[in-house]
Length: 244
Ligand SMILES: *[C@@H]1O[C@H](CO)[C@@H](O)[C@H](O)[C@H]1NC(C)=O
Ligand SMILES: *[C@@H]1O[C@H](CO)[C@@H](O)[C@H](O)[C@H]1NC(C)=O
Ligand SMILES: [Cu+2]
Image (tube, rainbow, N blue to C red; front, side, top):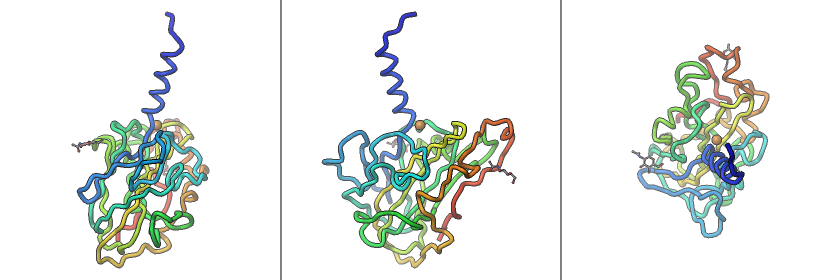
């Protein structure tokens, strides 16, 4: 059979783009917010989401782009939301990866999130889901549940979290390729209201990059290896979830 060169190359590129992605929009306390549109110039884009330029995963957990993707530069907007509200993040639909964890982090910006660099031990988890049931290679993972939920993930901001300016960082980690994990992080800028006084203690805080290392067995993993057949446990790296 004869094939032209251009058609398969174009198809391959389309497949590569559609096989990855990120958080495209949010429902924050009942209001819809569009995210940054990757592959487009930042000029003229006004969003609460930090800039991310491509659908590609991050595959080196030491990169600065692990924090809020690349370029990660602040958005012009923030969303005001009360502690205790729900936030729904929507990925490109259907999200293509069903093996690996979901983790949602927040960081207190101190002052204005539009001038905040999230370096050092500033991130705390408010939600995560790893291997929910079954085995590493055939079970239900957080990301599989996300796909089953219309490629969306709903979290509640802890009601007792002190008001202030925060980043919320949604992360899905795809581990379907042996020993080649893929991180997909996106950040959005929030102004949190409420009367809470809760502040996560030091044991809940982590640095990103820093919290994940390639040497971690949960990161450098082959879920399809002979040794992992029938294994039903998986520990998500990092600190415990802060629930308020
Ligand atoms: C499913 O997600 C899409 C965005 O990807 C959204 O527009 C739609 O409202 C969602 N459907 C439901 C039933 O939530
Ligand atoms: C499952 O638990 C065993 C025994 O504690 C441990 O050696 C192994 O690393 C764990 N596997 C995963 C994928 O977390
Ligand atoms: Cu992908």
